[in-house]
Amino acid sequence: MAQSYVQVTTTTDSRAEAAELAKASVSERFAACAQLVGPIASTYWWEGEIESAEEWMVLFKTTVDRFDELATLITDLHSYDSPEIIATPVVAGSLDYLAWIAEQTEIDEAEDPDED
Image (tube, rainbow, N blue to C red; front, side, top):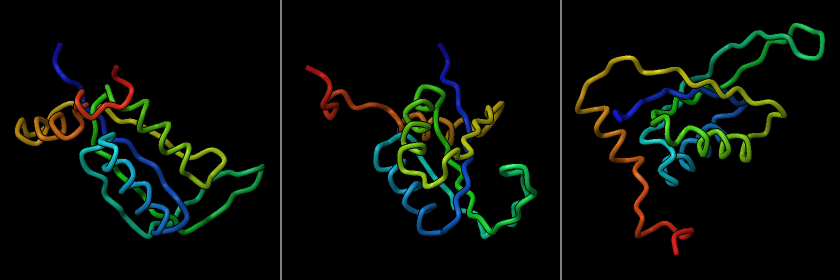
């Protein structure tokens, strides 16, 4: 079956936390690349009120196969109670770039500590 790709988005309230999420996701090979964008101005409903805040966005490039692990990592490390975790399908892209994403997020069985 052909590989499927997604771009995953989250936001956080600090550049430091965004950078930590980016580094952890790439270090674990849950994402091939993570880009920080910001600061951005966000307006949203929270607890019955309209809120506005300065946030940082992180864009993760990954495969569908690594999404669940990436989402778990974001949830575990994120300071928000309900962090944004949205996966947008990549419907087309440079074949070389997509191959690079697949290669960088590939699980190396020799390094997998869960393998017996």
